[in-house]
Image 1 (cartoon, helix red, strand yellow):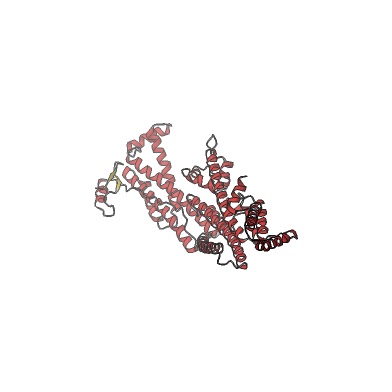
Image 2 (image 1 turned 90 degrees about the vertical axis):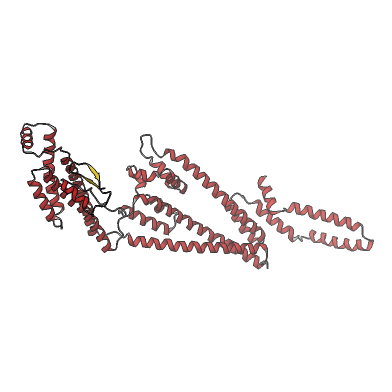
Length: 485
């Protein structure tokens, strides 16, 4: 058998071979005896007969006993199975054969490495087989396949390497079920170490609260996977250190502390101890980072969280209103909305008869927007420093009879509402700072419009104003985008 061949090559002779050697030695001794003189031959014969008598009376050769015990241990092993080899190590120590235990440790380590490599290869191949099945024919995500891939390291790595599949799925809103909590695989797995579970729960809470950027989730998942591997390796090293220390104690009991095997075990244990110290240091770093993140990511009080939601809503409404107002400024400059007295009279008459002419529709849409712009701007800026500016611009808009006056008033309101967006972000930052909470990873983006000019005088003023550096893009009175030379 292949295993017998391997065992024989690694551990030397078995009882049969040893007995053959002893018989051969006896024959050699007999041949030598035949060459002796009668007196010497008689003395040797007496000694040989005494040895045979001891064997006949039940005495045993110590070396034969040791080899027989070793052979029995080896025959009970599956040298491809690390657990079986571990049992053999224990039996060798109990039988007082430390050199056998030492050799079996090397065989076990090799078998473990080979098994892990083979398992890793199999999981990588399995992940590659699953990847093409992650999307159903209709383009939706196959939840069963996705969850299988997320359940093991090679699967998560395969997803991450697949052109950032997970972030893409989040962006198109295709992630449901477990993907809504990508940290559940660490939280719910009973084999995951406790400190990793704690960190995973913290990340999960941060994601739900909107503190953790979804685009950073994959990095956090990889971080948790690395932490899990370190903890598991640490525990495995501890078991190895204990087993090797037991063997060293066995060597010491036999006075073999200067043997090659003992010194090799001592060197191996020292190396593992250093590795454990490195792991402990990394654990401390991980724990410090977790505690810092936990302190920074503590949730806002309910009343503060409610105020923050109001700020987000205000920013969204102000942004939409400002963008629409800026679009109307450009539309007025392009001449799409008529302001002349004759035009307005004509539009009013045609509108009364239900005309669908383009200039009638444009003017009516503008009037409706103007009413909404006035009401919303007053509501959004009420009680703020910009309330007075908003009221003045509204009066100018309501009394405007020319394109320039209307466009200027609307532009001012667009800028005031854009400023309201920035004010909402500052309010959120100030509130979180005062509460000792970490700033949101996805802030409200500022809204900045290109400068508008409405007359040639405005253009000349902008070109001379150092506030606008060379290369500034602005919109001229005709609605054309220009670059400041």
